[in-house]
Image (cartoon, rainbow, N blue to C red; front, side, top):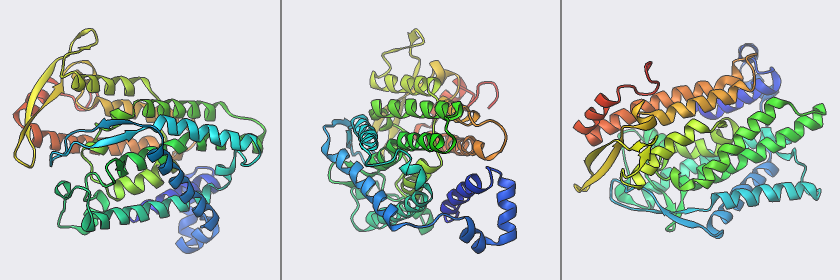
Length: 391
């Protein structure tokens, strides 16, 4: 947890000052020592940028609460709360991007304003993420939204990192998870891309095909995310992960500065199959055939029994975590636009591989505990975890 903000800074220093070479950046760090290294190469705090960043988050909050929204429901929580969510992200994304371009056209903002202030924005987003993580931790203890959905362990550090509250909220629909992941972070992706494209043209007088390809793929993913925002309500982030440093800092700092998703087809198809199966209670076709399902019962912590479905056909008949395979292909496709000159441009693909393999293990344990013998039946029918014939 503690090294995470420093990792973002180190990656930026490597890209900005050492041409993306981890070896050169690490050698310089060992030679200069941490203090001199940071003094010489590190990003600087800017009060102006921090205020601007805070205003950005508040602006997105205003759009979240004030724009017309479709009210959607998520999955039943362990304490049997069925929560409603504001889903107006696509409208917020359009307004934000149109406003940014118009302000630039009118001469109020330079298109490359984000790129020019990127070092200070890295600092601001890290501070924001740490402050939000701390607020979420103390809120969970002092005024939780749903006290019966909290999870405590014997480690305060673990509770701070992984979170105590499942769905911290302001009011009935002000959901921390949906807002922080979707609005300040994902809305910003296309603005960041536009700004760095403008900066590249301003400095070099041309725009490379690789940055265009990466930005187009980014935009495609972002639009798809917000058009299908209600789908996100049934993912592991919303339905299972508690809200701590992992999600709060990750959404405000890690997501916009390091993570970028690029790709589309397999990722969308896999998640669509699972979503339509659950929405129709299995009464649908997958790849032209009736969906093959296993009906499961599970018991929530209040002792009540519920039903669920495990899809055994389509992509989900090839691998139990086919959605993660799509994400891996997307991340490697994104990194491939940068070539193979250095390892650092492939950091995202490496990070996603480690993250998703870990999530596979977490999902396996959780599903085994939740579904018992029915999960064993599913494993027998779909033996591969991630890559058919390999793993």
